[in-house]
Image (spheres, rainbow, N blue to C red):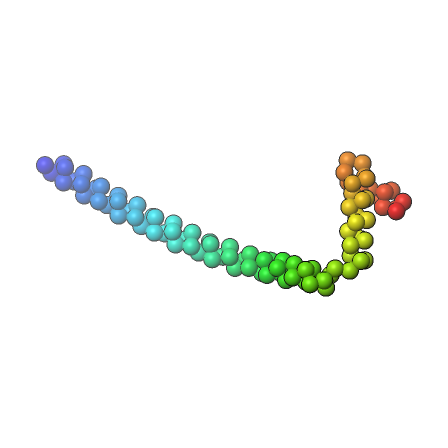
Length: 91
């Protein structure tokens, strides 16, 4: 009977320890999630601002489009799919 009581007490202690580990893990997880949100907030804000500018036409100029089209052509026509100095010099 003593042995059973000792095992039950040991089990209770292990369960309490496990609950403490879980609580610490969840607290750390919440901390990391907040840190991640703080770190990604700025890039997302910048990305959304640039997208709004693009959609409103502030960066929608012919020179921007021509530059993008030229680079894409150079990239696609280059050996192995990469632009080379000779390809960029010829255009």
